[in-house]
Amino acid sequence: MMNLVIMAVALLIGAVAQQVLPGLTFLGQAKAPLVLSVVLYYALHRSPALLVTAAIAGGLLCDSLEALPMGYSSAVFCVLGIVAWLYRDVVFSARGVTHMVFGLLAGLGLTFGLYGLLLISEESLREVAWCWIALKAIGTALLGMILAPIVFAVLERLDRLTGNIVVESPT
Image (cartoon, rainbow, N blue to C red; front, side, top):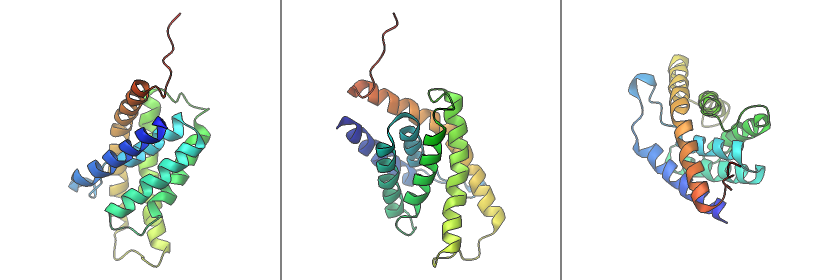
């Protein structure tokens, strides 16, 4: 039960902070991918059921707060989360460098995934320059690389405080 409470609080705070923080103008108005970082945390450290719950809830929150059609972010979060979950046994999921790499790659995937869905949908992109999309993808990737380890550390600390993670004593 506490897993869901921590997830709900993290997604709400992440979604609100993502909307309140300004986008980086020189990087194509890239926003901090805080909700994506929460989804990645659940992909690398929790069950697939919690991952999909976080991806769908986080996507619906993002789509509600942004000018995107409902479900687009959820679809991209699910795909990125499942890909991260598939590779979690191959990587050191508790390492900061791993969090940075996954944040970087997921930031690229988020931007290109959302713009790809917009491009093939009825809500097609208006005149958007591909160089602007690439610049925004680079900005989102860099922000993901910086913020993912921070979000992972905060969520791990919250999980330890609430008893979701059993702290092993060194013996």
